[in-house]
Image 1 (cartoon, rainbow, N blue to C red):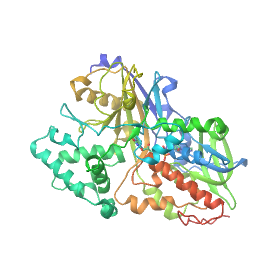
Image 2: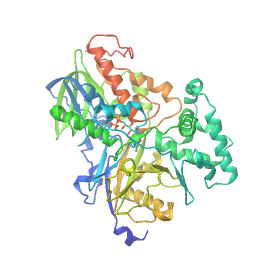
Image 3: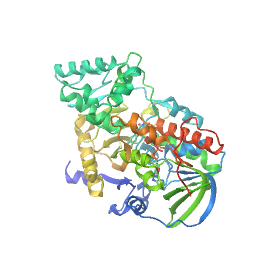
Image 4: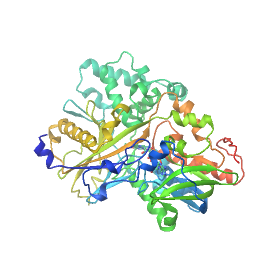
Length: 508
Ligand SMILES: Cc1cc2nc3c(=O)[nH]c(=O)nc-3n(C[C@H](O)[C@H](O)[C@H](O)COP(=O)(O)OP(=O)(O)OC[C@H]3O[C@@H](n4cnc5c(N)ncnc54)[C@H](O)[C@@H]3O)c2cc1C
């Protein structure tokens, strides 16, 4: 793309980047439209990360339950506790966390989470009045200028590889389909996917590297083998069915709906722009200290649900038992950008989630896929969301606006090379960057590390998708919230928890 052509395309950078913490607004040197910049005061998070001890002012309010973090997990907890005296605190200016949608001239697109993959997520959606719309399209691949529908189904014979590589893909499929996950699942959770790829050509690993990094944060050598087997059995098993559902804007539509359902009655108890800096168990309550509008405040609660990711949770909750602190510290999170390409003409609607091995992004989705055929639907724009997970060494690319723009420009250039029909200039390019949104599914973590992350510490309970596993998803964010709410209710009712024994903390 020439410099001149690039000048006609507007780049917008938004999102949360900095280490352990969201958006650094100071990095946004160029003026960007206020409505599309997702920002906050990140100095606070850095200070928490760097061990600053904040003053704990005297409590100014009392609630039964405080929920920290308003992503899918915190919102679900608030929904489950809607008849109780809860306070939900979120540091961003909006709720949703990694399930957050944005709009371009009224058309929604995802900035993160794309589709629901379980009854757990779809039934919650229905309960709050959002009808799930079926994806019904097994994933295609674009490779060497060719579009191949249903990659691991009929598509496998059409992949533009040599005959030998295609045969290797088929052999791999057969081997993974023959594995009994009920019997071997736990064992395969503890070994890398590459253990199943020995003696296969590099093209196979390249395909799965992209799929794993985008879907569960890890390339094949760092992925649990069980994840690959599970996905293959879903994509190519004898009873295969595409059971994914979504909405324009992806799962941001669900978090938005949860907010809309809760807000009318609870708006005074759902606070955005409130960054929690300390949570301390005391004998009969928990104190929660947060910064809101530059002011430090403390509230007390009978119990607290931490729905924040563990890399920040362990810095906030005081006096964690060593075992739990160690488990939280072991979790790893990848930097991840989403590049939304906005076209004012029809460019691509051949598949919902298309994989692009060898590109600077792993896959891209069509924002309005599930409504495209509705009779009254007349889209003005074709919005394509390119998933761009990065490895740790690439984190720096997101740290400056210039770096983020270059990344977005590379994504655009690679997208334009995919097919002759994608060689089109968008009217806008949006990059939404996040520093640590997705925890990596690593061999052994699900069986050995994550169980500890579900243990409450006295009156503090742990939600967030990273407590559950085996991979980061809305399903597990909801599951974590349900489990934490149940543990909390048992505790407040003086019942032994059916979920766990709980770790007891010595409190004064
Ligand atoms: C690019 C991408 C694509 C994905 N695609 C899918 C998909 O297609 N399907 C799927 O099911 N899942 C997908 N996921 C995973 C899914 O988005 C997450 O598992 C889910 O949204 C996690 O929700 P959560 O509430 O557990 O955590 P989060 O979304 O991380 O929410 C945590 C919240 O806590 C807030 N917070 C953090 N620190 C503080 C503090 N100190 N004070 C107050 N608030 C704080 C954060 O701002 C955030 O809002 C994807 C994730 C990413 C990043």
